[in-house]
Length: 402
Image: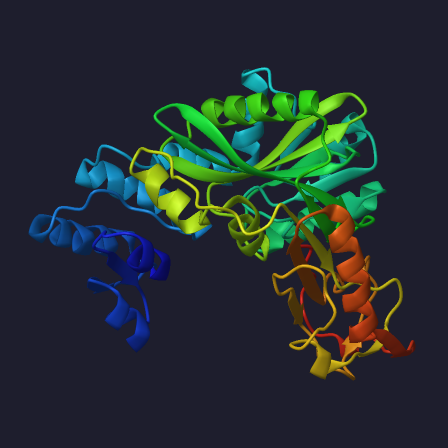
């Protein structure tokens, strides 16, 4: 909403529950809603639309994208996401079915509703496999399974959480690439491609990333075409998506389609290195058009997650976080820790391990950023001072994202 108010002349109807005073003051038309009752939300938005016609509905919250599609239909808006496309993106099984029907390569997979069925599917696909909820993103709830017993337990955990089925996929290997794309009027524009560096199984933590990706011109052209085919296959138009692809030894495999702006520090990296403001791209796409970038501040970006090979208690120079010196890039780095000095951390592959912070740099060349990263790490002086921290000392769910 701040980006819309600062960079456009749009009037904003802002729907939110438990709205803060700052949000009320910033919105042109604040609308207090209960997102647990979609019928009520639709009635309130329809009333606002009757008073002041709404041009489009946009959201960056994935679970609310189907609601945006339903509102588009209820208000009879010309542009915006459809509810069916939103649901087909969120349901990973539906995504795979539609992509496979369009001859787009995806990992072989099965939908199962019980542990016995899951064991049989895993045997057919061949171990190891990956088990995940059908509606999760960014590796939430994902389990890497090397045995049939692990498969059965992973499925049981998903069903115990209230879902009626789970998705089993073959385990594919290769470098991963994240794509942020805008599609409007049937035309896809790939805004940004990041080459991700993924940690070991079973947690697959995103330990780093490079922008621009190190793909050669031919591979990048393949990826642009593939992104367009993927979005067309699921019927996503007048909207944005964060897509995932794996370049296996046998070629590209399409993965998730998240119908929203990327999360985490990807937003700042996109903003700095492309000149595009992701929230404005999303708004323009929902209005049926492509956004125009400003001059980017940097040519490339680098991110590194703060991860560990062993468990222990972390120590680092907290004073240096906001006062790093001697860097070549004029753009200040982003450094964030999820833990304080003395807190316990776990190895990158531990179920409650993952990333305990992140470092994001933007500059003129990959070589410059690698030198700056070395200077950042030297000044932060990150170390483990005790390798005997108990698992119980870290009370949090695993996170795979940077």
